[in-house]
Length: 304
Image (cartoon, rainbow, N blue to C red; front, side, top):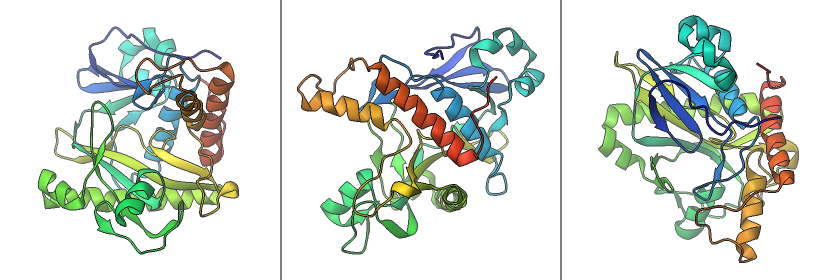
């Protein structure tokens, strides 16, 4: 089982993020998810086999099922369909197949559209500190990992480096205007509710998730980037859920736990470079990503 750190395709590189590479194909873009993994704002030396394929194939799964709620940027994720639309990609198929998605161009809105159905993570920290979430007051007496009465739109600014910063909905209106802000809020909440109910039937709780949206050259609002993956969402096995404590997540939690152990032992200061991961942590993380895909979709991860 090999991992892909970089694709290095012979096309103009528009952007390389912590995980994805975006290539310019004139009318279209090729978005490729590598197996790189980051934690504590550091890219980890060891990639996680199959991670990129899980991110791309799970996004495609959700994109194909949420078109009734909002149009998305995905044109194709199946390699044969991608080559049919962009024949010049055929010679490099082995570098991107399964992890590449052909997408429409879109200008992204500078806001992360986070939806929280359970109070955990940074939302729990904010609540403990101020009794609020996204600047709005919450009922007293909530406990960690408790389900909220209704999901809450909890936006954040998009940061190229470091952590995103939580902002209020009023700030989103100030940045984007009321019409766009209301669209992002309502669409994000509708997407979350649809995915939450679907996943719950398969024994998975989606505690929270984040979406990105953009506007096409034709002026259409689009769901872009990834959707409802282990990198953008917190997936909890329902069988292990108990209010009052945070259950294990089907994501990169083994990596975070290992790095936190190194911090506590005084062996790492949370600054780059990050320490190497043991093979056991790499393997466990791969299994968590694959399990998330299989549990959500009821299908094994496809091989290309």
